[in-house]
Image (cartoon, rainbow, N blue to C red; front, side, top):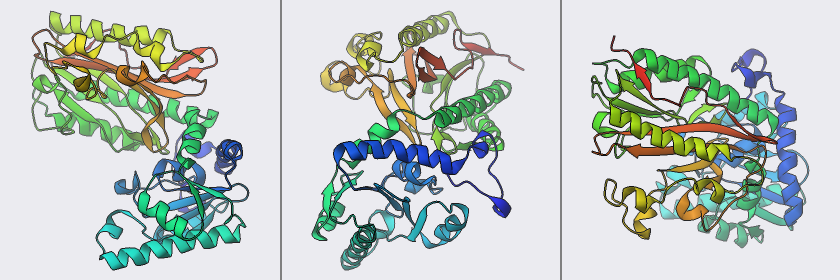
Length: 428
């Protein structure tokens, strides 16, 4: 998140009132606690969530959200974070964020790298690794362990060829550090959820018979942008697309019809880089009896799981509140009939942590994994839980999701659009 200052202007809202330098200090302090635990001298961050975490910057270009290869960062055990950035944004970031070191980056991977001839790729990779080694020498850390937050074989091999002691457990350190959110981060999520409540309010006024899906989703995106939230995801499903849920596209020109069930997911909407995941289901007019019954089954699963949330329980405790995937869907779409099939259900009844520049921070809630490999919940985690189901005739489906903060005494649901009953919208 770039915090604009002075004549650069301000990106408004709650986030602009946080002291960015103090905020970064608190985040880095958390990471360094784990670095000391594992005896790391530095961490090389290649993935965008970790780059953002240790520098207070975020990539605007969507292609950079994972391992884009265009920007990276080094967090030393002492001193300022170093951001390596393309020349143009680097020029501005140097002025806007004076409390980090900014250097020019080299494309070591990603689209630019992959489109170059093989000999050029070798040249770029060598320039990148020499740059990392030189930076560590300046810090007198070139003989210490350097953690790396992604297992990219050609990068690891190239760094080791420079005589660096590389350890891929850097990703474990960053994961552990980012899993529990600081108070400022929790406030970011509360503000984000508040704006998304407003998005659903706009949706409730826009979704009417004859209105195409893209117009409904567009209205939500416009509202989000006007409140400093970047709509970098989201989708709308209506009618027959709601079961099994058709996530092959964001929206279509299908016009809503009387009696339609409409499922909307406002995922990857970002406030200062912090990501959302928030489902609600609507009915165009009065919902049919079987839709209401299905909705009640789905929301009951969600509420029963939420009731037990508190620090110390595990993801296993949560998913045990949900039925087995084979029991639910062996004889109806999506036809989950054995253990192998069940491994394809990772976006059905599930839950996940929310984070900075990522919709998937730990922990992860999913029966095929959590029953065998549980993770413990801690105060300060920000999570999303989501459940779904289809009507007995598979005509349509419903899905509901809440954004939740795990608190010292239990939990706080920050997604406030009503969920106890399906929202029935007027016809005009």
